[in-house]
Image (cartoon, rainbow, N blue to C red; front, side, top):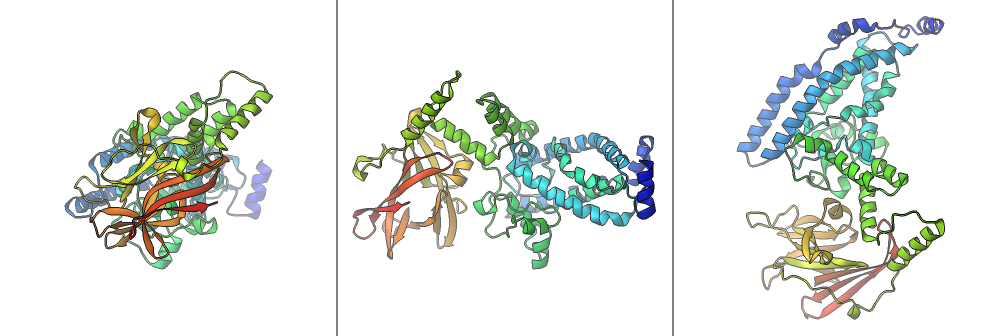
Amino acid sequence: MATLNTLWSANFPLFGATKIDFADSYLMQKEAPNLIAYALPAVIILTLIEFLVAHFGSHKTYEKQETLGSVLVGLGNLCLNLLMKVVLIYGAIWIYNQLPWRMELNWWTLIPCFMLYDCCSYWSHRISHINRFFWASHVVHHSAEHYNLTVAFRQSWVQHLKTVFFIPVALMGFHPVIFLVASQLSTLYQFWVHTEAIGKLSPFFEKYFGSPSNHRVHHGSQEKYLDKNFGATFMIWDHWFGTFQYEEEKPVYGLTTPLENKTNPLVLNFHEYRDMLKDVKGSDGIKECLFFIFASPGKIYRHKLDRNQQVPLPKEPHTKTTAIVLIMMLLLSQMVDAQPLKSESPLSIPAEKNLLFFLQRTPDVNIVLYELNYKPDGQLDPRRPVKGSWIRYEEQGRLKPLTSIEQQFTYGVKSKALGNEEYEIRLAAYQKMPMYLLKSTEDQKYHIYIRDEGQHHLLKRVFVKVKGGSFWFPKVAYIDLITTNSESGIEMLKRIDF
């Protein structure tokens, strides 16, 4: 090893630095400035200014319980970081000492180190969205439904699990001081992008650097914003790997399944681990157990919904032949021939005064209601004018809201304001067909209309006929739209074949 070190130092003067004695690690801590501690007063002052402006202004970006939750999570994370700093320093020194290409402490090496660190940050962030194990250590950051500087405080108490993604940077041989400074600079840079107070910046900056606008997209829950803009400081990684998206309409923040408890830092940090443990306990075999731990959150949700819709299988061991027969029975139970429209009579519908239309899907016996969504002050919510909810006939006909994932990918609707109190509405599962939420000239009430050959047709009911497949890949035979001509009043059926 000594010969190898000598060769490196002889041929590459930058490399071949002497090892760092663990006993001298305290000296290295002095050499590595604590940038976060220095910046903390500015962080607090800027956050207070934004809070006061929001409190006394018209743009309300703070909510009491949510803000308190962010502060509590941030305080806990600050304490943990003080403890983890020693562990990270010793870990960085240990890796550094194992390498023959150790670099001397030169501050210009901070530039390549920071670039490489930012690239690893991109992949760490991206994997945290597509792998449940790492998503559980990141979900707290996305749980806020209001976007402000305190969202930057929402860093998981177990986020240091993701240190594994930055080991390649340490293996490059950068001096531990340089590595730790790059880490602090990356963390500090990401603070200012968590605000709505700053609009879009210059086109060049928006294209190549992390900005409030770019990061608002990342926190948006609209379909076009999901899994976009993972970059921390530079957006070049998103351009290269196809995950970049400019901010267009205003993002809707928060998780696809919102949390009821917005304050308890333990719930905010560990609720996903609790749900993961519950799924693992109920798993059927090692394969499903690993799936619940490492698959993407979206696939896990669809798998659970698909499993709940199927006939429960016996838990006792069975032969391969029995398993094949059971699977065939499940598939055949879904592959039912389409019946004439008149035989597919709708289930009883509650007399909801805000009801727009409802949806049925075979073989599901429950239906989805689509109603006007009013705010507490009685005004129609312009950001989400239509809401969906289940009528659970298997549960004594009780109403149950759609989950956020159902809203995003299956039974929800996407809305777009057109002006003049008009909205374009599209079903999340079939966005090719626009519908329109308009006020009727007759009763001055909102209704959903389909435009066909220049005429408006009042939508009453949607029927989706599924022939086989699975929940992930259902084989849709056709979609029926039962409408009424706004001029003649004649009920009509518009069928979309697949």
